[in-house]
Length: 394
Ligand code: PMP
Ligand code: GLU
Image (cartoon, rainbow, N blue to C red; front, side, top):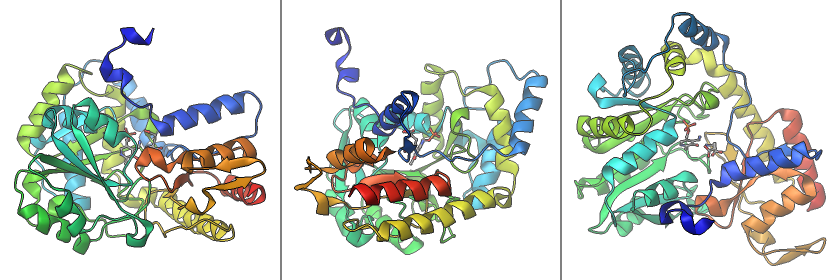
């Protein structure tokens, strides 16, 4: 059957995060006691004030197509949020609301990338970046980083990766999967290099901005010289536990916003109307309303780091944001544990799933073959049990 499908879809990898989550779900349905630490999804309920706004929107009959780029008052709430949290000034004509940040990224790729254009991805990068770039016929250029630099790309590495074909650089801070957070000086260092290459655009994925344990999130669009060449991507999935409601948005140069609106007009006609109305309530609320989630993630990060430090062979950085740890487990490569030889991170992740009933994701999917990703968006009880099981089988 496959030969009837396009090369485009045949050559695309399945999202490793979603595939692992599906596998864990399937095993759980078959009666196995699986602890799912594979999916980056807050385990909190959506705050009541956001649910109320959605219910109100249904009663107020927000049931027609919205403007393709989002309701004007939602775009105003996005503009206010950018100003309040990031000190970025975006007019409504620079903002596009989409069906999740994932669609925002896909829109950007389809609107900015021509065949053969190179897109620099500091690795590890979020799993979908490289396939989204490839779908747009771009060429992902991975810049490997390691635990020694806290998984951050240095200005020298950026400069070395730039060629005449470089069109964009995509990164997330706080980073999925490493949890690393670029500070102002580090972003200024990257901006200094980019100054020499005025045609390179930056996608700054800031979906974890509030889940930042050090505080003081910095947007690269606010660094000198970067505003006109940065597309800032964000959404409500992570900060407000609204993953299933599928709302993301961008702020960026007007011509890019216009192109994304045109593209989305031929694809989705815009995001879900009820979820858009609820997002106004979410974005208008002060960050203090979601601080309890951030505090909880902070506690869990400390717990997971402590428990992992008791397991020999895990080399872990201290993630300053998001809700992942990304341990280097390459010390296990070449070893045979209870009859299973571990040759790579995929073998290791599979070994944990089959023997400890703990779902994680291989680092290969994120462009780093020495690591696995563990999401700690799970209860303290589950995290303690998962780490105990992993320790026992290793
Ligand atoms: N960017 C990053 C770094 C992510 O981890 C995710 C996770 N879903 C997304 C974008 C996409 O988010 P969503 O489509 O749910 O808004
Ligand atoms: N972003 C989350 C993750 O990395 C959700 C899954 C996905 O959208 O791929 O696990």
